Image (cartoon, rainbow, N blue to C red; front, side, top):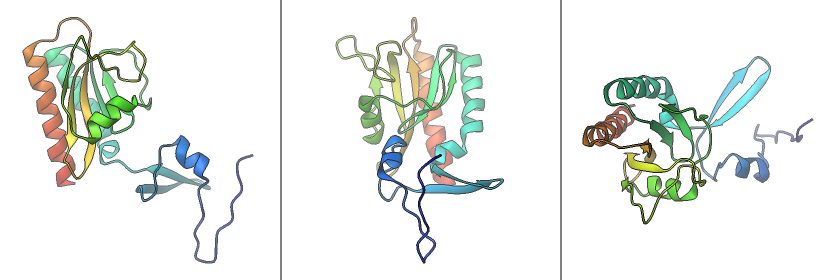
Length: 170
């Protein structure tokens, strides 16, 4: 059995801090509320999550055209991946999340390597943020496997720009 909470007279309920922390939900974070049968589902809102199917389509086209390993993520977790067996919904390292929130592009630096999840298994070749200064949304990330061509970098940057434009128009 889970934690039991009661609605107040205004129909509000408090989500315990431990659960909000575990799901990386901060105060004033937007959440989506939906139902599934007799259950109420709360999910952290992300414009990119709404484009998850489109992200998968874009990644498929990217891999067919450029090859390599490409990941699209929100500000906190992997949303879509192609070219490597990697679970979606894994959380990003704090360094990657910080770069995305500050819209910092990253290109592989042997002296200052950046890893996707904090372990050394998934080195990042390039990170191109998605979103704007006022609303960072995620990133297109190329993982460091073999040699990355100039066209792969250009296409990844283009993909980040397209996703930024699509989220601005929604």
